[in-house]
Image (cartoon, rainbow, N blue to C red; front, side, top):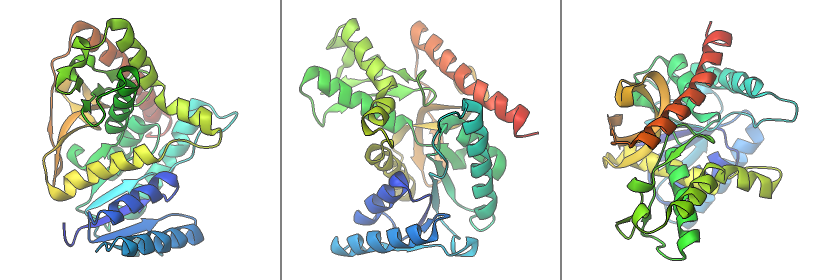
Length: 314
């Protein structure tokens, strides 16, 4: 992974934690941070660089003074955006973050012609769509982090229900990153055994419901914030897969072009990651219920995309 450069835009909790994870594990040669808050981004770069030195990491951590300093990245992770505020409608949040995403892409796209973009900003699937439109890049070069996070949450709730299996639970979630996501019990395993052979239908439904509201649960407990350790680590796995070209399969938000019967819409599906970004979309065989749930999830994303197409991309 020598001579690989990762750019991170937005150094809130997720962006800073991601930078810390990457630097601690020496996953790249250089990390450059970018944020509108110049004092914060400089402080974070200094703090994370010092932690990297404590870990004897070979990763250099710095920050960008301007767009020219943020150049020639192999992977760029975008976490920039605002959370929904009191009195703000869903469309207000969508259009505000679409404006931020487009501005970010326009600022850095020219200086990073070969970069793979990983989007973390919410609403996730719509922001991947926005980044694709703004960058005009091929669909394999822009993808969203959500499926790994949602699957990790499902794994936690499986462990919580069973009381065993730590480290040997492999959960699978598809669809949009929201309440209509599609946890796949028959593609989830504990110690290699299918989940639907271990737990009954009622237990599985409880786990699925908890998974769909896993992020909201943390927001409610924190009161003033949202999750960041699990999102940041999930993003680091995607960065590692791309930089190492290890061809691992992860659920990621990508533009569909015929896969699962859908066109021109972003949704979370299993993909194989490598140096070219999304190298293959894996099509799982879904049962009738899962097919219907996936269609409902697609419809939820389509509502957001339709709003973007009529109110933003005009």
